[in-house]
Image 1 (cartoon, each protein chain N blue to C red):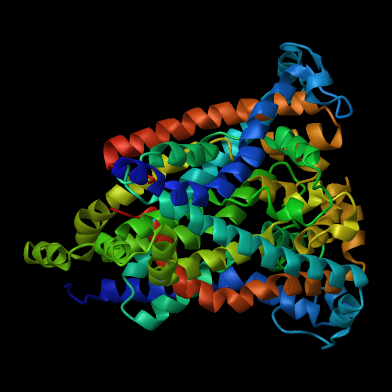
Image 2: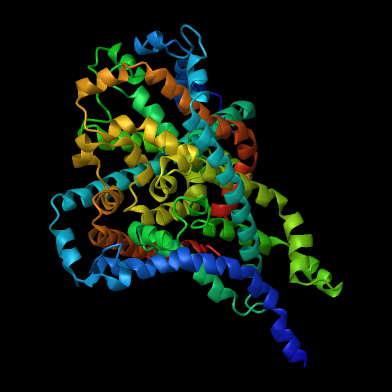
Length: 293
Length: 300
C-alpha cells in the first residue's frame, strides 16, 4: 500500500537498527550481570567484564549455594508461592463466579461487587494496615505473607469479565440436568476458562516470587525472610547508608561484586524460566484486562 | 413454597463469597477504620482504644514538617513525568513496530522489550546499582569513551529524578507497547487501502488512519493513569534512593515508611498516608468517571 521509495528504504533500515538497539538495551544489563557473576573477582573489580565472562569461574555460585540464609529464604519463598498461589486462585474463582451473575439472577451481586471494588479505590494506608496485621497475631509466620493479599481484586475482575462472555445456555442446561451452582462452576466454568486461569496463575506466581515489602515489615526475624526480601537487604544495602562518592567507589571495589551479580541472577532465574510460558498468555491476558468492549 | 425454594437457591453463591468477604473485611476494611490512629497519639501497647485522642495535632505536625512541600513536589514531579513519557514512548514504539514487515523480527523485539516488566525492583535495583555505579559501572565506562566524567546517577540530586523516570520507562514501556499493538491490529485494513487510493503516502496513512484508530485506547489509558499522580513508585524509589538524594527523590510513600516504621511516629505517618489516600480516591474516581462518560469504559 505504498510506493517503495529511497526514503522509505532508509526509514526501514533505521527502524530495524533502532528497534534492535532498543531490544538489546532491555536485556544487556541482565547479560552483563550474568557475565560478571561468572567472572573472576579481580576481572570484575577491574571493570574488564562487558558481555562475556573474563576468567571464567563458578566460585560466586558455590559461595551462595553454601550460604545457609540464601537456601533458607529460598525455601520460605517456595512455601509462600505454593500456599499463596493456591489461596489466591481458589478465592479468585469463588468470588468471580457469583459476581459474574446478572443482578436479575443474583440480587446481591452489585452490593458484593462494590464491596470488593471499593478496596481498590480507598485503602487505610501503610500504618493502619501494619497495625491490623500485627493485632491479628500472624506476624513472623508464613500467613502474614499470604493472608493480607488473599483476594486479588484485579484478577477477580479479569476472570468475572471472562465468565460473563461464556454462553449462558451451558449453565442452564446443567441446571436442568440437576446440577447446582457448585457443579456448574466446577464442571463448566472452570474447564472452559483454563486459558484465562493459566494467565492469572502465572501472574500470581510471579507476584508472589517478586514480593518483598511485606516480608521486610511483617517478619521480625531475618530468618523468616523470603528470598526477595533477603536479596533486598543485601543488594541495596549500600544505598541505604549515607556514603560519599569515594566511599562508594571503595565499597564497590570489594570483590562481593561477583557474589551480588550471582545473587541477582539466581533471583531472576525462576522468572526467566517461566517467561516463555508467561509471554504466550501475556498478550491475551492484558488485552483481556484493558481493552474490552 | 416455590418462592421459599427460590429464596434459598442462592445460598451457594453467598457461601462462595463468604471466605473472600471475611478476608477483605479483616485486611482491607479494618485498616480503613484504623485511620483513627491518625487522630491519636498512638501507642501500640495501649492499642487504638487506649491511646490518647489528639484531634488535628498530627495534621498540624505534618504541615509543619520540614521538607513536606518538597516531598509532595517530588512525588507529583516524578509521577507526572512517568505518566507522560510512559504513555508517549510506547505509542511511538508501537507505531515503529507496526511498520516492520518481518513477523519474526517483530516477535523477537516484543519478547525482549517486556522482559524487564516481570522482574522486581529488587533485581532491577541490584542491576542498576551495579551498572550505574560511578566506579566500574558499565554505563559510566561507556560514557568515559566519549570523555564524559563519571556521573553519579543514583547519588546526585541533579540526576536522580531523571534516572528514576528513565529506568521506570525502561522497565514498563514494553507492557504498554503490547496494548497499543493490539489496538493497531484491530484497525480495518480497508481504511489503509482507501487512504492509498486517495493518494496518501505512508506518513499520511499513519497520521490520518493509524493514530485516529488508536485514539480511543490512548485516551482511555491516559485517563486511567491520572489516578497515579501521587504514585511515584515506592518499590523503585525505596530500592534506589539514599539520604544523599532525599532532597530530589524522597516521595510521600517513602516518607510514610520512614516516619511510621522507622521513627515510630505512627499517628503522623497515618495522617500523611490518609492525605495520599483521599487525594488518590478523588483522582481515581474522577478518572474512572471520565473514562466511563467519554469512552464508555466500565471495570466490571
